[in-house]
Each structure stands twice: as structure tokens, then as C-alpha cells.
Image (cartoon, rainbow, N blue to C red; front, side, top):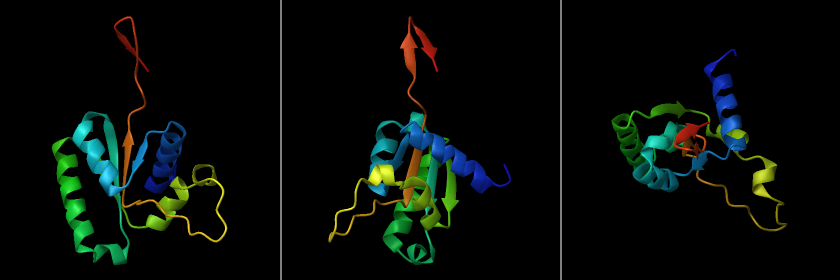
Length: 126
């Protein structure tokens, strides 16, 4: 791998296939509140316009503080458009309805969680 971006693409690709991604500031906050131990990575995505959004920056500050308190890795993404390309593939969106605007999910905060752990006879199996 050449860059951190390449590594992040691979992580997101694997997390998508394993369905271990949570998107949205509100959804991320709920998951962090209920199950922070299974969150391994938090992505905060904002462009220049988002940097001027005071409410979003307050959310980011709170999420960063919570992640630091729970030893969750945080990455700041400065290209939300590229992140959207990686996460919003056609098979997730379904067929587009003609005449209606599809609602884009909030990708300002993305969490990657651990894969599901299976228990067998008291042992934890990957």
C-alpha cells in the first residue's frame, strides 16, 4: 500500500462487506453510548463549508472527546466526497426513483466496529 488513503479504502471495503459500518452523527453517538468497546475507528469528514458549521463542530468535539476517553482511533477526512464514493455503492442505494431526489445519508461521522464474535463451548472464535 502506498498511502494511508489506500489503507483506509481497504479497511472501509472490508467493513462494508462485513456490515460493520455505522454512518451519521446521530447514529454514531447512539452506538458510542451503548457499545463503545466494539468501535475500532471513527472517521470525521468535513470540507471547508462544514468547517464553518458551528453545530457540526460541536458534535465533532464531543465525539472526539468520547473516542479519546474510550481509546477509539480517530481519523479526520478532508474529502467527504471521496468517502461518499467509497461507502455509497449502487447495491446499497437501490434503484433510483425517477423524479424524486434520493436523500443522501449523513456521512460526517462514520464508525467501524469489530466483526461479530461467535461463542462456542465457552471459547471465543473469530
